[in-house]
Each structure stands twice: as structure tokens, then as C-alpha cells.
Length: 232
Image (cartoon, rainbow, N blue to C red; front, side):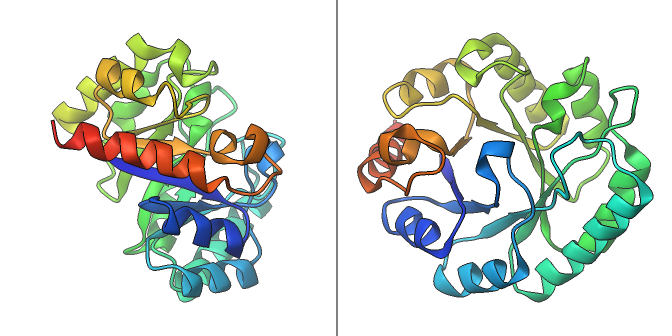
């Protein structure tokens, strides 16, 4: 079992690592669902922790439909993120019709090179997630898909996530479940869905507030539960 924790600053990343996180998703603008952090922040976080750092590449929060200027910006960000030594990137792009934009995706993947790639929750806006997963399975660079099984919180989409896990085991990126998960509910969620990677943001922060610092006890609680489940 693997625990990914959102970080928005160096201190977040250090606290997450020290208390059991296995991977960082580095973002800014957490209340907007995450945008690309400054390259200075990327460089400092990569130096500050030993666990992998996946960096969000998202130029704005208007939508996941991107113009040429947006794509050019993302390509430049990916180049800089790779040069800063990050382990990977978190990307996603949709067409105006609500399908995966493979033309943009292929450009971003070409720029990514050997970087590890997560397809983010743009996936949750797809009308047909099974078809979307089959599309992403054609791109071996994509290691995982961050999803809550739709627009609702993940604990409300257990059947959908269980189906995605089953499909991914046949042929496709791993399912990284996130959005709405809690430390006290994670054991039941994992048992019902079969996910092997989970993603936490606000639920492991002080007062469970997105703009608050990381709460070490909450990260420890999730990490401990996942370790215990891994030994069964």
C-alpha cells in the first residue's frame, strides 16, 4: 500500500515524509484543485525530501480544455520540472466534448521523457471512465490515474472505483484513489475497492482545512493503517 500526500510548501513535504508518506504531490492553489507550483518551490522540495515528488502541471483552473498557449506553457513547465530533479509530473487534458485529448497528452508525454506520470482528476469529468482508462492504457508512460470514481467523493463511488481497479489490473495504469478519504475510513475503503495507492490532502491537515499545515498525527494514522493492511 502506498500513501501519497499533497504538499504546498517545503514544510508540508518534510512533515509528510517524516510521518509516513511514500510520495508527495506538489501543488499550489490547493483550494482550486491544484496548479503548477513555482520552479523555485519544486527545486527546494526535491532537495528537502528523499521520497518521490510528483509535480502538478496545470496552468489554470478554468477547465481541463487547453489552448495552444496553455500547452506551450505546460511544455515549458515540464522541461523545468525535469531539470529540477522531480520524480514525475501530474497532468491531464480533455477535449471540448469531454474526452481525453490525446493530441495534447502525446505532446506532454513526449516532453516528459522518463519522468513518472500521473493522469489527474480531469479523469473524473469523463462521461465514460472505463473507456478513458482504456485510452490511457495505450500510453505506458502513465503509471497511475488519480480518481474519485467521478465527481463525488471517493467513499461515495466505491463500486465505480472497484470496477476501475479491476480494469486496471487487466491492462492499464494503477488506480490512485483520492478526494474525500479520511484516516478513520481508509481501511474499509481499501478493503472494498482493492486500491493499492491512496491520495490525501485536506484530511491530513490541521482541522482538515486545505490551507492549514500538515497534521503529523493524521498522516501517521493513515500510514499505520496502510502498513497493517499490507501485512495481511
